[in-house]
Length: 485
Image (cartoon, rainbow, N blue to C red):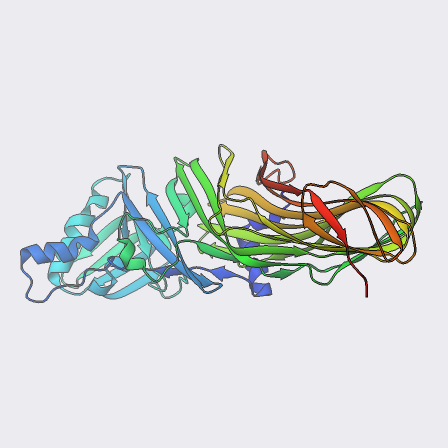
């Protein structure tokens, strides 16, 4: 069940929380390799037009951010479409090298051009905004271009005065925010777009972002059973998850309405080891069950400044149980390790919503069962490691979660206080009678794992729209007694 905290959907709170914990990865502005065309020496009219084309007004443009986490250099892309004949967009990152100075105020910007040809080209192109009162020119200022703007900032220009003798253009307008201006946009994290540049230009970047899955499961707990003559203790020194998950995010809107929103996920050397010791004591004829959250770990949050994107992944570690009836007192230990193939792929469609997956059937290894005293009992315990994502893109909220749930269980009846050691192997027997060293037992063991996905809207995180099992593996076990030394 998705249970992501609502505060992930507030960009200011996301940044504050992650900064305090030192787990944030805020993307930095990155200029595309082919974005700047420097002036050529000994230029003629054709080379002037080519190099000055960076001043051209556009109806659509792309911006890039980059960051590093877990040794992966990751790229994010935002493509915006003004979607209006009365508005155009230009990026100062493309022509800052042609300016002598930039002076910004709260209601205007003064650009001083390097030479007369550059000024003339800019004036011919940007005079367009003065020819109609309804026209707007959106000038995207690069990081620190105004001195006081820490990241890219859209500036809405309503009119321009041109002073040719001083080579200065005085722009009247106001700074704004991405989400207030653009209603047609496409956001991609992890997959390099093929539009404005070639894949070769981004060779240093990985295809997907990476989410670490290296975590210990802090399982040491006494389970209170009110009104029952029974005590239950569970511990697990070797419980842990390993590896990482690669992921990508893609969201596209038109006129402010989401057209597509998807999350891709694939494992990278992922495994989970669950080796619990269960202490049972008392007399109980019925059974009890519950699930407890052990810890929630916000990890490597991703933020594109300016309210473009906040992505808050979490790892949530839990355990659950179903125990009973119980008669006697004993400790039971066992173990299971699951591993996922790196070729597994998962795509979550957040809008339809739907889940498509392949290759997620896990490999499973089991550890021997140990019972240290006389007891008759039934028990099933499991660990659950969940990857949960909350994405806020221009204040549109989506949530999705994936969980791995390895479990162990058995119905046991050991006849003497000496206990019993039993090797558990893959096989066709569902139950067996075994004996060793004078001890006898009837044991019906079970072990396996399930992998599940759920999707929810941000305003109803506890009410998933889709819950889907992408893999389940339940083992039949064969048991053989071991000599205890």
